[in-house]
Length: 363
Image 1 (tube, one colour):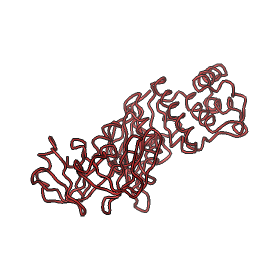
Image 2 (cartoon, one colour; image 1 turned 180 degrees about the vertical axis):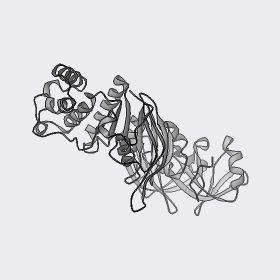
Image 3 (cartoon, one colour; image 1 turned 90 degrees about the vertical axis):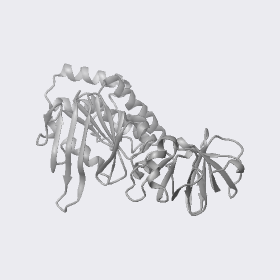
Image 4 (cartoon, helix red, strand yellow; image 1 turned 135 degrees about the horizontal axis):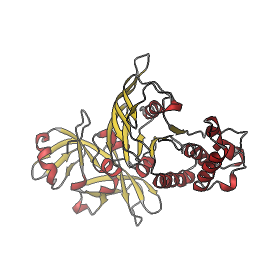
Protein backbone atom coordinates (compact mmCIF):
# COMPACT_ATOMS: atom_id res chain seq x y z
CA UNK A 1 0.00 0.00 0.00
CA UNK A 2 1.08 3.66 0.07
CA UNK A 3 0.90 7.07 1.69
CA UNK A 4 -0.72 10.03 -0.06
CA UNK A 5 0.35 13.62 0.66
CA UNK A 6 -1.52 16.73 -0.46
CA UNK A 7 0.36 20.01 -0.10
CA UNK A 8 -1.74 23.14 -0.78
CA UNK A 9 -3.56 21.46 -3.65
CA UNK A 10 -5.75 23.85 -5.67
CA UNK A 11 -8.11 23.52 -8.61
CA UNK A 12 -9.08 26.79 -10.31
CA UNK A 13 -11.24 26.76 -13.45
CA UNK A 14 -10.86 29.18 -16.41
CA UNK A 15 -13.78 31.28 -15.15
CA UNK A 16 -11.92 31.85 -11.86
CA UNK A 17 -14.05 29.48 -9.77
CA UNK A 18 -12.02 27.68 -7.09
CA UNK A 19 -13.19 24.07 -7.03
CA UNK A 20 -10.61 23.17 -4.38
CA UNK A 21 -8.61 25.71 -2.37
CA UNK A 22 -5.38 24.99 -0.46
CA UNK A 23 -6.09 21.35 0.46
CA UNK A 24 -3.30 20.01 2.68
CA UNK A 25 -3.33 16.69 4.55
CA UNK A 26 -1.59 13.31 4.65
CA UNK A 27 -3.22 9.90 4.25
CA UNK A 28 -1.38 7.20 6.17
CA UNK A 29 -0.42 3.83 4.73
CA UNK A 30 -3.43 1.53 5.15
CA UNK A 31 -5.82 4.30 6.27
CA UNK A 32 -9.45 4.62 5.18
CA UNK A 33 -10.01 8.36 4.86
CA UNK A 34 -13.42 9.81 3.93
CA UNK A 35 -14.04 13.07 2.07
CA UNK A 36 -17.51 14.34 2.97
CA UNK A 37 -19.57 17.43 2.31
CA UNK A 38 -22.65 18.69 0.43
CA UNK A 39 -22.98 18.68 -3.35
CA UNK A 40 -20.53 21.08 -4.97
CA UNK A 41 -18.14 21.19 -1.99
CA UNK A 42 -15.17 19.90 -4.02
CA UNK A 43 -14.88 16.36 -2.64
CA UNK A 44 -15.19 14.55 -5.99
CA UNK A 45 -12.94 17.12 -7.66
CA UNK A 46 -10.30 16.45 -5.01
CA UNK A 47 -10.61 12.68 -5.54
CA UNK A 48 -10.28 13.12 -9.30
CA UNK A 49 -7.15 15.22 -8.78
CA UNK A 50 -5.63 12.33 -6.78
CA UNK A 51 -6.67 9.96 -9.58
CA UNK A 52 -5.21 12.16 -12.29
CA UNK A 53 -8.58 12.67 -13.98
CA UNK A 54 -8.56 16.38 -13.06
CA UNK A 55 -5.54 18.61 -13.59
CA UNK A 56 -3.91 20.31 -10.60
CA UNK A 57 -3.78 24.11 -10.81
CA UNK A 58 -1.18 24.47 -8.05
CA UNK A 59 0.26 22.59 -5.10
CA UNK A 60 1.94 19.20 -4.88
CA UNK A 61 0.52 15.68 -4.81
CA UNK A 62 2.68 12.74 -3.72
CA UNK A 63 1.83 9.04 -3.76
CA UNK A 64 4.31 6.94 -1.81
CA UNK A 65 6.72 9.87 -1.78
CA UNK A 66 6.67 10.38 -5.57
CA UNK A 67 5.37 13.66 -7.01
CA UNK A 68 2.60 12.68 -9.45
CA UNK A 69 1.20 16.07 -10.55
CA UNK A 70 2.04 15.35 -14.21
CA UNK A 71 1.85 11.54 -14.06
CA UNK A 72 -0.94 9.94 -16.12
CA UNK A 73 -3.73 8.09 -14.26
CA UNK A 74 -2.60 4.64 -15.49
CA UNK A 75 0.91 5.22 -14.10
CA UNK A 76 -0.17 6.34 -10.62
CA UNK A 77 -0.93 2.77 -9.50
CA UNK A 78 -4.42 3.64 -8.26
CA UNK A 79 -7.79 1.95 -8.81
CA UNK A 80 -11.09 3.81 -8.82
CA UNK A 81 -14.63 2.61 -8.05
CA UNK A 82 -17.48 4.77 -9.41
CA UNK A 83 -21.09 5.13 -8.32
CA UNK A 84 -22.46 3.85 -11.67
CA UNK A 85 -20.45 0.57 -11.55
CA UNK A 86 -19.07 1.16 -15.11
CA UNK A 87 -19.25 -2.55 -16.01
CA UNK A 88 -19.09 -3.81 -19.59
CA UNK A 89 -22.62 -5.17 -20.21
CA UNK A 90 -21.55 -7.72 -22.87
CA UNK A 91 -18.86 -9.26 -20.62
CA UNK A 92 -19.34 -11.80 -17.84
CA UNK A 93 -18.29 -11.08 -14.27
CA UNK A 94 -15.02 -12.95 -14.84
CA UNK A 95 -14.33 -11.03 -18.06
CA UNK A 96 -15.06 -7.69 -16.38
CA UNK A 97 -12.64 -8.58 -13.58
CA UNK A 98 -9.96 -9.71 -16.02
CA UNK A 99 -10.23 -6.82 -18.50
CA UNK A 100 -7.79 -4.41 -16.86
CA UNK A 101 -5.30 -7.17 -16.13
CA UNK A 102 -5.29 -8.28 -19.76
CA UNK A 103 -4.60 -4.72 -20.89
CA UNK A 104 -1.57 -4.70 -18.61
CA UNK A 105 -0.25 -7.89 -20.15
CA UNK A 106 -0.67 -10.17 -17.12
CA UNK A 107 -0.38 -13.90 -17.70
CA UNK A 108 -3.44 -16.16 -17.84
CA UNK A 109 -2.30 -17.91 -14.66
CA UNK A 110 -1.90 -14.67 -12.73
CA UNK A 111 -5.25 -13.35 -13.99
CA UNK A 112 -7.06 -16.53 -12.91
CA UNK A 113 -5.37 -16.43 -9.51
CA UNK A 114 -6.31 -12.80 -8.86
CA UNK A 115 -9.90 -13.28 -10.07
CA UNK A 116 -10.33 -16.34 -7.84
CA UNK A 117 -9.01 -14.48 -4.82
CA UNK A 118 -11.28 -11.46 -5.40
CA UNK A 119 -14.32 -13.68 -6.10
CA UNK A 120 -13.83 -15.55 -2.82
CA UNK A 121 -13.37 -12.31 -0.89
CA UNK A 122 -16.52 -10.77 -2.40
CA UNK A 123 -18.60 -13.96 -2.48
CA UNK A 124 -18.93 -13.87 -6.28
CA UNK A 125 -17.63 -17.38 -7.02
CA UNK A 126 -21.05 -18.62 -8.16
CA UNK A 127 -21.63 -15.58 -10.42
CA UNK A 128 -18.43 -15.48 -12.50
CA UNK A 129 -20.25 -16.61 -15.67
CA UNK A 130 -23.16 -14.17 -15.27
CA UNK A 131 -23.63 -10.97 -17.27
CA UNK A 132 -24.13 -7.68 -15.33
CA UNK A 133 -27.82 -7.57 -16.35
CA UNK A 134 -28.41 -10.77 -14.35
CA UNK A 135 -26.91 -9.34 -11.15
CA UNK A 136 -28.50 -7.40 -8.31
CA UNK A 137 -27.35 -3.87 -7.56
CA UNK A 138 -25.27 -5.08 -4.64
CA UNK A 139 -23.61 -7.78 -6.75
CA UNK A 140 -22.78 -5.25 -9.50
CA UNK A 141 -21.15 -3.00 -6.94
CA UNK A 142 -19.15 -5.95 -5.64
CA UNK A 143 -17.95 -6.65 -9.17
CA UNK A 144 -16.88 -3.00 -9.46
CA UNK A 145 -14.99 -3.39 -6.18
CA UNK A 146 -13.51 -6.66 -7.41
CA UNK A 147 -12.23 -5.04 -10.58
CA UNK A 148 -10.30 -2.60 -8.39
CA UNK A 149 -9.12 -5.35 -6.05
CA UNK A 150 -7.57 -7.53 -8.78
CA UNK A 151 -5.39 -4.61 -9.82
CA UNK A 152 -3.68 -4.72 -6.37
CA UNK A 153 -3.06 -0.95 -6.55
CA UNK A 154 -1.26 1.25 -4.06
CA UNK A 155 -4.39 3.33 -3.43
CA UNK A 156 -8.13 2.65 -3.80
CA UNK A 157 -10.33 5.65 -4.69
CA UNK A 158 -14.10 5.24 -4.18
CA UNK A 159 -16.41 7.95 -5.54
CA UNK A 160 -19.85 7.63 -3.88
CA UNK A 161 -19.95 3.90 -4.70
CA UNK A 162 -23.17 3.21 -2.77
CA UNK A 163 -25.34 6.13 -3.85
CA UNK A 164 -27.32 4.09 -6.41
CA UNK A 165 -28.26 1.36 -3.92
CA UNK A 166 -31.37 1.15 -1.75
CA UNK A 167 -31.12 1.70 2.02
CA UNK A 168 -30.77 -1.98 2.95
CA UNK A 169 -28.08 -2.63 0.34
CA UNK A 170 -26.21 0.53 1.35
CA UNK A 171 -25.99 -0.78 4.90
CA UNK A 172 -24.74 -4.22 3.86
CA UNK A 173 -22.22 -2.76 1.39
CA UNK A 174 -20.89 -0.37 4.05
CA UNK A 175 -20.15 -3.39 6.20
CA UNK A 176 -18.62 -5.13 3.15
CA UNK A 177 -16.26 -2.22 2.43
CA UNK A 178 -15.23 -1.91 6.09
CA UNK A 179 -14.54 -5.66 6.18
CA UNK A 180 -12.50 -5.50 2.98
CA UNK A 181 -10.45 -2.62 4.32
CA UNK A 182 -9.71 -4.50 7.51
CA UNK A 183 -8.68 -7.66 5.64
CA UNK A 184 -6.60 -5.92 2.97
CA UNK A 185 -5.03 -3.18 5.10
CA UNK A 186 -5.43 -1.03 1.99
CA UNK A 187 -5.05 2.72 1.64
CA UNK A 188 -8.51 3.97 0.68
CA UNK A 189 -10.00 7.39 -0.07
CA UNK A 190 -13.79 7.33 0.02
CA UNK A 191 -16.05 10.16 -1.17
CA UNK A 192 -19.64 10.53 0.05
CA UNK A 193 -22.24 13.20 0.76
CA UNK A 194 -23.84 10.88 3.34
CA UNK A 195 -22.59 11.80 6.82
CA UNK A 196 -23.76 8.43 8.24
CA UNK A 197 -21.51 6.64 5.74
CA UNK A 198 -18.68 8.99 6.63
CA UNK A 199 -19.06 8.43 10.38
CA UNK A 200 -19.33 4.65 10.16
CA UNK A 201 -16.59 4.03 7.58
CA UNK A 202 -13.88 6.64 8.07
CA UNK A 203 -10.91 6.25 10.38
CA UNK A 204 -10.55 9.98 9.75
CA UNK A 205 -12.90 12.36 7.97
CA UNK A 206 -12.14 15.45 5.90
CA UNK A 207 -15.15 17.79 5.97
CA UNK A 208 -15.34 20.17 2.99
CA UNK A 209 -17.55 23.11 2.11
CA UNK A 210 -17.18 25.54 -0.77
CA UNK A 211 -13.93 23.90 -1.87
CA UNK A 212 -12.26 24.45 1.51
CA UNK A 213 -11.41 22.02 4.27
CA UNK A 214 -13.45 22.81 7.38
CA UNK A 215 -12.02 20.18 9.73
CA UNK A 216 -10.06 16.91 9.69
CA UNK A 217 -10.41 14.48 12.60
CA UNK A 218 -11.73 11.12 13.76
CA UNK A 219 -15.53 10.63 13.53
CA UNK A 220 -16.17 11.00 17.27
CA UNK A 221 -13.87 14.01 17.67
CA UNK A 222 -15.76 15.73 14.85
CA UNK A 223 -19.04 14.90 16.55
CA UNK A 224 -17.92 15.94 20.05
CA UNK A 225 -15.82 19.00 19.11
CA UNK A 226 -16.94 20.48 15.76
CA UNK A 227 -14.61 23.30 14.74
CA UNK A 228 -17.36 25.55 13.41
CA UNK A 229 -21.07 25.92 12.76
CA UNK A 230 -20.89 24.17 9.38
CA UNK A 231 -19.35 20.99 10.81
CA UNK A 232 -21.72 21.13 13.80
CA UNK A 233 -24.76 21.29 11.55
CA UNK A 234 -23.55 18.85 8.90
CA UNK A 235 -22.40 15.90 11.03
CA UNK A 236 -25.00 14.18 13.15
CA UNK A 237 -28.42 12.76 12.38
CA UNK A 238 -30.56 14.55 13.37
CA UNK A 239 -28.36 17.63 13.13
CA UNK A 240 -27.21 19.66 16.11
CA UNK A 241 -29.79 22.12 17.47
CA UNK A 242 -28.61 25.74 17.16
CA UNK A 243 -30.00 28.55 19.32
CA UNK A 244 -28.99 32.18 18.85
CA UNK A 245 -29.04 34.51 21.84
CA UNK A 246 -27.10 36.78 24.17
CA UNK A 247 -24.76 35.18 26.69
CA UNK A 248 -25.34 36.45 30.25
CA UNK A 249 -23.47 35.76 33.48
CA UNK A 250 -25.57 36.66 36.51
CA UNK A 251 -26.28 33.93 39.04
CA UNK A 252 -24.68 31.49 36.60
CA UNK A 253 -24.48 31.32 32.82
CA UNK A 254 -27.64 31.98 30.82
CA UNK A 255 -28.54 32.33 27.17
CA UNK A 256 -31.12 35.04 26.57
CA UNK A 257 -33.11 34.04 23.47
CA UNK A 258 -36.04 35.97 22.04
CA UNK A 259 -38.38 33.62 23.93
CA UNK A 260 -36.68 32.71 27.21
CA UNK A 261 -33.61 33.00 29.43
CA UNK A 262 -32.06 29.53 29.38
CA UNK A 263 -29.97 28.53 32.42
CA UNK A 264 -26.90 26.69 31.15
CA UNK A 265 -25.63 25.34 34.47
CA UNK A 266 -21.96 25.14 35.50
CA UNK A 267 -19.82 25.13 32.35
CA UNK A 268 -16.56 24.06 34.00
CA UNK A 269 -13.62 24.18 31.57
CA UNK A 270 -15.63 26.36 29.15
CA UNK A 271 -15.98 29.13 31.74
CA UNK A 272 -12.72 30.97 31.05
CA UNK A 273 -13.17 30.92 27.27
CA UNK A 274 -16.72 32.29 27.55
CA UNK A 275 -15.95 35.20 29.91
CA UNK A 276 -15.00 37.60 27.06
CA UNK A 277 -18.32 36.77 25.40
CA UNK A 278 -20.48 37.96 28.29
CA UNK A 279 -23.32 40.19 27.02
CA UNK A 280 -22.46 39.32 23.42
CA UNK A 281 -24.43 37.32 20.88
CA UNK A 282 -23.45 33.65 20.47
CA UNK A 283 -24.88 30.48 18.96
CA UNK A 284 -25.50 27.65 21.41
CA UNK A 285 -25.28 24.11 20.02
CA UNK A 286 -27.17 21.22 21.64
CA UNK A 287 -27.12 17.66 20.29
CA UNK A 288 -30.61 16.06 20.15
CA UNK A 289 -29.67 13.46 22.78
CA UNK A 290 -28.59 16.26 25.15
CA UNK A 291 -32.02 17.93 25.05
CA UNK A 292 -33.83 15.80 27.64
CA UNK A 293 -37.51 15.96 28.68
CA UNK A 294 -38.12 16.80 32.35
CA UNK A 295 -40.65 18.19 34.81
CA UNK A 296 -41.54 21.87 34.58
CA UNK A 297 -39.79 22.64 37.89
CA UNK A 298 -36.44 21.38 36.53
CA UNK A 299 -36.72 22.89 33.06
CA UNK A 300 -34.03 24.96 31.34
CA UNK A 301 -35.98 25.24 28.09
CA UNK A 302 -39.66 25.16 27.11
CA UNK A 303 -40.81 24.10 23.64
CA UNK A 304 -43.92 23.15 21.71
CA UNK A 305 -44.09 19.56 20.43
CA UNK A 306 -44.95 19.68 16.71
CA UNK A 307 -44.22 16.23 15.22
CA UNK A 308 -43.33 12.84 16.73
CA UNK A 309 -41.14 10.50 14.63
CA UNK A 310 -40.95 6.96 16.04
CA UNK A 311 -37.89 5.20 14.55
CA UNK A 312 -38.21 1.98 16.54
CA UNK A 313 -35.51 1.93 19.21
CA UNK A 314 -35.70 5.72 19.54
CA UNK A 315 -38.08 8.62 18.94
CA UNK A 316 -37.35 12.04 17.43
CA UNK A 317 -39.38 14.89 18.89
CA UNK A 318 -39.65 17.83 16.50
CA UNK A 319 -40.11 20.95 18.59
CA UNK A 320 -40.36 24.71 18.31
CA UNK A 321 -38.81 27.17 20.74
CA UNK A 322 -40.02 30.60 19.61
CA UNK A 323 -38.92 30.73 15.97
CA UNK A 324 -36.22 28.08 16.41
CA UNK A 325 -36.88 24.45 15.31
CA UNK A 326 -35.39 21.85 17.67
CA UNK A 327 -35.12 18.05 17.77
CA UNK A 328 -34.86 15.85 20.85
CA UNK A 329 -33.80 12.20 20.66
CA UNK A 330 -35.54 10.11 23.35
CA UNK A 331 -36.28 6.46 24.15
CA UNK A 332 -39.71 5.05 23.23
CA UNK A 333 -42.34 5.51 25.94
CA UNK A 334 -45.38 7.53 26.93
CA UNK A 335 -45.21 10.91 25.21
CA UNK A 336 -47.65 13.81 24.98
CA UNK A 337 -49.55 14.36 21.76
CA UNK A 338 -48.40 16.78 19.06
CA UNK A 339 -49.30 20.35 20.00
CA UNK A 340 -48.50 19.93 23.71
CA UNK A 341 -45.91 22.07 25.54
CA UNK A 342 -42.85 20.23 26.84
CA UNK A 343 -39.98 21.02 29.20
CA UNK A 344 -36.31 20.09 28.79
CA UNK A 345 -33.00 20.12 30.63
CA UNK A 346 -29.62 20.68 28.96
CA UNK A 347 -26.42 18.75 29.66
CA UNK A 348 -23.91 21.53 30.59
CA UNK A 349 -20.73 19.60 29.79
CA UNK A 350 -22.11 18.66 26.36
CA UNK A 351 -23.01 22.20 25.21
CA UNK A 352 -21.22 23.86 22.27
CA UNK A 353 -20.78 27.61 21.82
CA UNK A 354 -19.96 29.33 18.50
CA UNK A 355 -19.17 32.79 17.19
CA UNK A 356 -22.24 33.82 15.12
CA UNK A 357 -20.13 36.02 12.83
CA UNK A 358 -17.41 33.63 11.60
CA UNK A 359 -18.95 30.42 12.90
CA UNK A 360 -15.82 29.32 14.78
CA UNK A 361 -16.09 27.27 17.95
CA UNK A 362 -15.62 29.35 21.13
CA UNK A 363 -15.68 26.63 23.76
